[in-house]
Each structure stands twice: as structure tokens, then as C-alpha cells.
Image 1 (cartoon, rainbow, N blue to C red):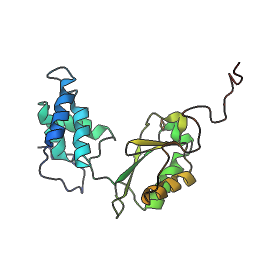
Image 2 (tube, protein in one colour):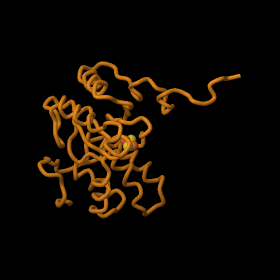
Image 3 (tube, rainbow, N blue to C red):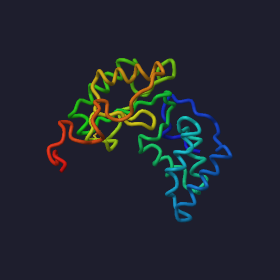
Image 4 (cartoon, rainbow, N blue to C red):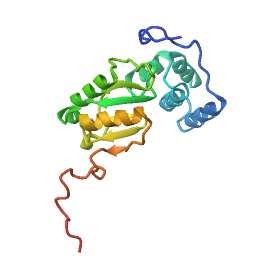
Amino acid sequence: MIEAGQPLGVEQPKSFAFTPENLERAKVAIAKYPPGTFSPIMPLLHIAQEQAGWLPTAAIVACADLINMPHIRAFEVASFYTMYNRRPVGKHHVQVCTSGPCHIMGSDDILHTCRNKLGVHGHEVTADGKFSVAEVECLGACVNAPMVQINDDYYEDLSPASMEKLLDDLANGRPVKVGSQTGRQKSCAASGPTTLKEVK
Ligand code: FES
């Protein structure tokens, strides 16, 4: 059982077991990789996180045991990627990208807007359990910077005002628009087309 390196101040459940349905999903994931390799650890961790809502140490161990992977190797994977939450997160887990392009486009303001509006810092979850905020590396949507990922969805072309509105809407259960918040089509130039303007 892994003990060193567990996040401080996090109450860990003593055990974790996949539900029968998720165990079947885990077996399907394992079968996609060559036998005896550790490659299935990533989808297994995803399934475990989906089930528990976050990734307790006991869940990491259960995933490793399914493929006879040394616990510490599985822990290395789980602690490297920010997509794995080794602490409980809010119902809406806001991941703010602060890498190069997002930084240039104002991600600091987006991060401050989230933290100030929600009153959370570090790994805290809001008192009502609705929100948590994390600062993460590039999420691969640089063209639409600055952006955040909330649970499985991307919200792009943000400003402090649109970020605040997004948080308000989520807090109040109102529908929100996924993708660009300025209405631009996917990753098309924000200033509009510069070529192929006339269709003949
Ligand atoms: S730098 Fe933010 S998505 Fe790439």
C-alpha cells in the first residue's frame, strides 16, 4: 500500500472496489493492449476516478493490481497528469490553463476571477461542494486562448466577464454554452476570413 506521497490533509478511504459494471469496462480496456504491459493503467485510472468522483490512493492500488503493476509505478502516472484528481473536487472542477498562449491572452485574469469569485485557493472545494479550481498546463486549445476545462467540456475565448457569467450560470443550474464564448466558429480566425471570401 502506498503511503509516502499521498496528498496532505486528504482523508483517504481504506478500500476501493470496482462495481461489477466498471470491472467489465476495465477488462475491455485491458484487452485493448498487449498482454503483460502496464499501458492500460491510464484508462483504468479514468474509470476508477469516474466511479469515485476523484482518485483515492486505494483506487490507484486497485487499478495497479488488475494489471500486476507495481503500486509506485501506477502512483507515478496518477501524480504526473493533472487529469487525475488525487483530492476530492467540486461538482464543477474548473481547470484553468496557464501555459504560454493562454498566459499571453490573459489566463492570469481568468484564474484570479475564478479564485476571487469562488473564494477558493489551492486545492480547496467551495463550502457548497459545487466548485474547485486548478491551474493546469496546456489543454491543447491554444488557438482559442484563454480557456478552461470544466469537467469534460472546454470553454474558450474567455474574458473575466464571460468567466464570471459562466460560473454564475453553473452555480444556478442555468444552461451554458460549451466552446467559444465569443461565438467564433471553432478555431477560425477571430478577425474573420482573409482568403476564399468569394465563393463562385
Ligand atoms: S496554452 Fe492554453 S490550451 Fe494551450
